[in-house]
Image 1 (tube, rainbow, N blue to C red):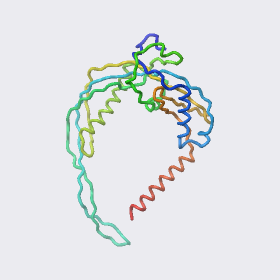
Image 2: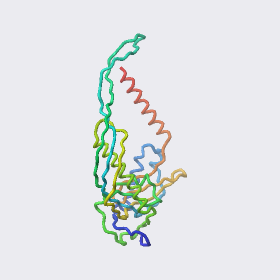
Image 3: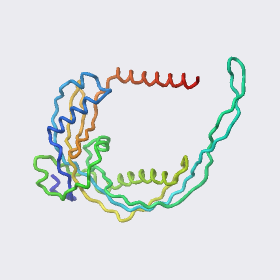
Image 4: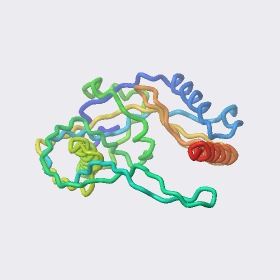
Length: 262
């Protein structure tokens, strides 16, 4: 339980969601799977919940970025075109949009706090991304007695590997924020060079109820946030419901096209 050699956890979030509450939240989540087969929602599933503290790295960093890009502004002009109506060719006028591009560059400074990277190779990346966010403002100093009655996984992603993933997350945020800062109607060829300083990390443990269930001989994992109760996981999909959804979308698109051309 993280008591052997390695970086010891600095803080954690205790469980607020009980096991019974987690099971109830899963049942509600199951009923809302619209694409799942009908009998799945009514079927009683055999599964066991395990309370587990999942290891995370939390990173802080101050960034300074230099960027270059091209920013586009939309303009409009009236153009004359030709079309065929009832076998006759006729001219008509329409409004055409075009983009004027210009170069831009600048600097952007931003401080990042508590960039969370899960440090478990056992957990599903998709589920771990979806289970958040965790209320990190409630973090408490680590004490071994918080782990009583729960499992606690030791980190299997080291701090350097975690930081590489953390920087990818920061760079994605920077790209969004710098694009918004540049403005215009479109941005292309955005290139960003970022310097990181005052880098710090801490090892934290965050609570989750982890489980899986079997439906028609196939196993589906799910996880419940131990603080907020948010549920994420995999569920079976009914091909009939998917087909109905696709047909419904096609009907809606057809109706829009028919009435849009009148």
